[in-house]
Length: 380
Image (tube, rainbow, N blue to C red; front, side, top):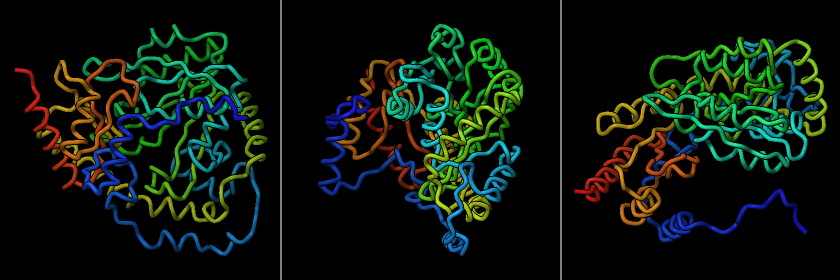
């Protein structure tokens, strides 16, 4: 009766079962996985709700690219031509559009490892296969281009990346942009860069210039209100197309047909978008201050792996520790919730992923409990 697209097990794993039992029992958990800014003690201006009251929201004006003034507001923020901006309801929907644009059933996209697990779900729902390429760590995270080249086949259609990566927090470097451009031009591949965390540099500001890659292939950058303005509930995202004019024009024409089939972005949010982006600047500054403050304190307590941007930090467990067992013990006995590295497809054992978005008092108490558990379990 049901589609083969949903071919994952629907049963809870051991981690989920324990978490459900803890919450059902009323445990006061310290959540170091928090990724929802609206639940993280961030102050939101009331004017955000007022922005949704524009009377133009009562009029339906279907436009597959999005309303012109909303696209112009995004273009100003992204420093891109408005005619290259397409609005969607979310980055997840943007991926769905792009998989429809680029892939036939059974085609492949290359995704980084480690990275956010959502890619595999989104791709398989479009009958697209995912193949992992490696990010290697040697003092800093970088693309392993040998593994990337080895995985390109005639059925490969695009290379996906997150900039900065989630969870490693590593920005793509100019030399990597140039190599990606050459590889993609050689094999007629598109580049899809998910940049939802790009405006959260944890040290110095970073600017990524995709110009060298866009000279020879289609480059699509994704972003949205969820992270840019800390407003995941507003459901507005966007794609920015770049590349050779002929390729951009053809991609835009096909995307317009796809978007016209759905017309999913709500009219009130589109009219509010310029104001939401303006108000979101203050929200984003609060979030960035939170991230930097928690990271500074974490670095004073232990040695997280280097991180350049984003919302997460990575701790490496001492050699010989069982990552899965440690996370379960930490939740069961210390009531601290963290994510194990295998959630993000780390290629080796022994990593914990912590959200820097957590409230500072909860973050500090949770990390202190975590470090105490490591000290008690450390091999002699």
